[in-house]
Image (cartoon, rainbow, N blue to C red):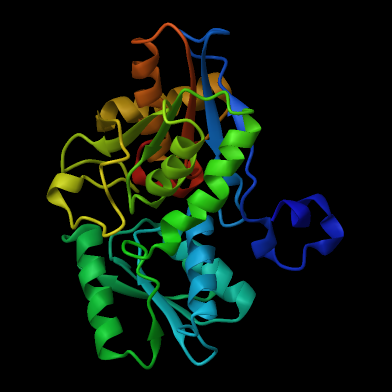
Length: 307
């Protein structure tokens, strides 16, 4: 992928721009110094606007290679937002029809984006959240196996493989291996599983902190409270050194501070992972912390946080 991006004349599709996102050092928050640094892996720079572009492309490519996804089939999966948009974008670019099962109460920004890409939206119960969408998607895949290719982002090994193959190596190279902590939120868990595996292979002393909401009734879109949710098949806590339980209100405050202090307009989970990093920074004398921020804040404008 790096060769493609370094030779602009060889970019033949929007999907060639997925990955190789910037690394940005924070400078405006209290507690930062030359010995205590936080770096942001800015995944909103992906063409579909989020880190989910990586996993979606990996799963679709895997389906094509395994001949499970053919021109006669429609890509269908459950998603509350970012992965749905990634499927829709990539499907449009590669010529596949796309249908997404998503809770009826997803915000207007995501609905309009999916519609713009030409994806069909199948609504699940707004009261059952992402788990309800998962169950409905599984039913459709079982009942209409001839019609649908379901990547199944929560159980597909191509999801964490995307991050083992791209996100982890990019982080290592961008910081020349000078990383002490890796922090990312848990949704499908693909980012944490794949990136951490690669980074731990490079340096087993890197501390991996996985961020989850501190309760089931949270407002951190994109993050999953594992104790009360359907556990993703790709998830394992063996590679995780610590779980940070993020409070919704405090995460929103950090999200707002990222705009005011750094000019970074990020999503809910971005606030949560930086909150975790700031708390970790208080415990150590030296640190080079990498936070993965999955998406930008423009996808949350109608949610009331910025009113």
